[in-house]
Amino acid sequence: MKPTLEEKTLLVIVAAFLPTLALGNTNRIVLRVNDRIATTYDYQVRRAARARALLDAPQLTEEEKQERLSRIGEATMSAIFEELLLLSRADQLDVEISQSDIDEAIQRTMESMGIKTPQDFQAALQASGMTAEDLRAQYHRNLMMRQVMGRDVQARAAVEEEDLRRYYHSHSEEFEIPERLHLQEIVVLESNDLGAEGMARIAQEIRDKYLAGDDLSELAETYAADGLTAGPFDLGWVEVGDLDRELEEAVWQLQPGEMGEPVLARGGLHLLAVLERQEATLRPFAEVKEQIGARERDRRFNEEVEKYMAELEAKSYIVADPPPEAAGFRAAAPVPTVDPLDVLDEPAADTSEDNPDSEDESPPPR
Image (tube, rainbow, N blue to C red):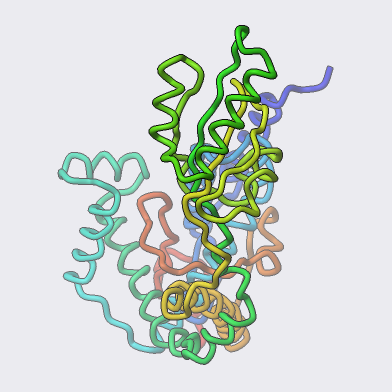
């Protein structure tokens, strides 16, 4: 008998947590980047936090959770590796973060998360498995990494207006406003008394009178008094694909002031009148400039971050002795997002420069 999806998930969860029990000495160094180190303990903490976050992620299916848990070791080690690279660079740049910087960053995060009281703040810390001291230490590291990115990468990702215009012209289809019609509808209701011929006669009368200049609301009032019609209804602006095919074909080539032929649809014969028509246009560059700029800055920043991280790795002294399940972490390392202040979800490694309890030779000079 094959295991159910729930049973498979349980097995993956157990497998995700068991390796942390068998890693032995928690002071063993698993990674060194210049003067920055991470120990087995750091790896265990990060790995367990990542597993909890995956299991609590409502947007992931059970299959996605299984897949991510199956490579949690490499993902955890990759995140630690990226962090050490950036923190080591922060050391080289003599980056300094004040306590007030940390206070402000924590306050901004509390506001963005809707945390209003100290009690809510403590509850969020407990849910994340962190203490206030852990949180401040993590913010200190994250702000250091942010400063590194600001100093070394931001300028490389600058976008000029010429770049934005080039994108605008080469991706003009993204900024097209499609052709659309503002429509009004009246329906000749199905009636056993009228029959198909009677309905068609009433619909044609309404269309002829409308095209002759009569007001549709007044026409509708006249026929509605006898229970023959419903409406008129303002359908607002519609684009190609918004209407049933038969209704669209009856009205799409018409101009304002015209009415389409009656179309048999749900409830009776439908008559559509065109109130306004807007041809397809291109949004002006000035209107979409900021939108393009934000998109292009993000794209170029991500490209430059990828190059930058490769440069840091090439210039760094690296000694890696990861757990077997994380052996391929360098090949699997993703590009860091590094706006890393959402730290109530995952504690970071204790990436101290000099850990007296760690077992390793003296670090090489930076």
